[in-house]
Length: 311
Image 1 (cartoon, rainbow, N blue to C red):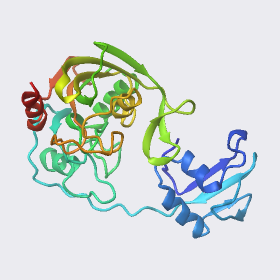
Image 2 (spheres, rainbow, N blue to C red; image 1 turned 30 degrees about the horizontal axis):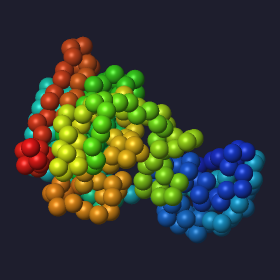
Image 3 (cartoon, helix red, strand yellow; image 1 turned 45 degrees about the vertical axis):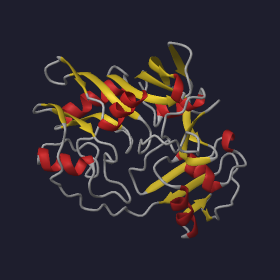
């Protein structure tokens, strides 16, 4: 997978992609562009194979040279917004906030206002790292819109590089709390299964037999609610793949309560507003002092209310 950082994409087809449609191949290789946008580029004669413009249905052969021209993206101006932040930890290098449900972490198509970035830009002024560009100042990692809890942002590039390296090495302590459907019989367990884009739906992730990225989740049962057929669990991430906990728990038959993407289509009468998932513990080595810092984000009201009502 690759992110587009330039205005041109070159690729020589290998044997594993022999016989694949060119539009599907490009979408497999470029994670940051949608299938519809790739098709638009093809329709606009921006994609050629071996020097000749092709259609989306063109079937590639091993050794084909693909060239795609990508017009410069217009980056909207991201403005600071005076949005209250629940700050768990802050100093001159990093800030950890407890993100509420429904808030998008960084601006993207359809979400240029009301994001965590907008709030951080107001709170931190000009003190945010610039490594991820104007759309994601300070952002090292993210959690989903409807997932609540701890998110760390960096105020300078030195801190950003250091925290990013800790994430890459899987040394940051990340513990989530979740409520999943069904009664998990084992008190704890490990799920080690590679995750990648779902072959049937590019907007979803899935456990793949081949081609996915290694993913490891350890879960521990905190409480079983037999009457409601639900289990309250703690999950410790050893890797940090997109939708990892949601995909892993669904793969063993215990999707998260309220998960409209990976859970059952039939809704329950329990009010969750999306998946019942909370990033509770975040522990890291401070990039400057070397001190271990750990934050504990309290459960959101809807989550704690669910637990209380099911006792």
